[in-house]
Amino acid sequence: MARKPKNPKKPIPNSYKKKKDKVKLKKKKYDVVKCYWHDITTQGGWVAEAEIEGLETCNVITIGLLVAETKDLIKIASSITLEKDEEFSDVTTIPRVVVKDVIKIDTIDKEPPKEDKLTGISKKR
Image (cartoon, rainbow, N blue to C red; front, side):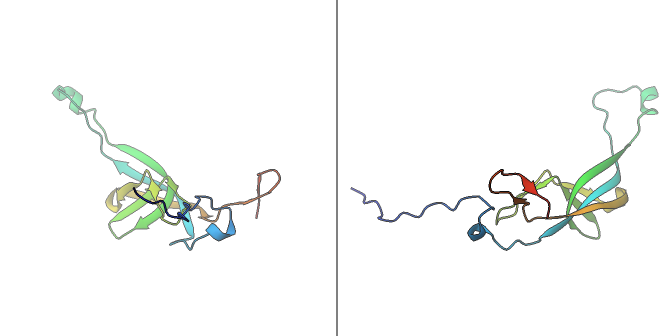
């Protein structure tokens, strides 16, 4: 019969509000950008020759957190976790050769907003 440990480790809560749960983040600030770029389009199925002349590419705007960039690529995410192990959601990787312009909208801080303990409402810093 297996014995249960006397003091099993409790899971660490995911809360970032308590001081003891704060961790050092890899990067504390991210630029919020608006990226204008040119994308391909696809026409599936059979198409008559006359219809091919009307097919066009499209202009796109992607707005999000600039999480990485190289000389060849720009990577923009829609969301980032506030936990120790950073994870990103909905990352769009765009080749620089199709990028027309990247405009910085804002810079965000990964520190969560301060909350009023009584109401739970975020306060401006």
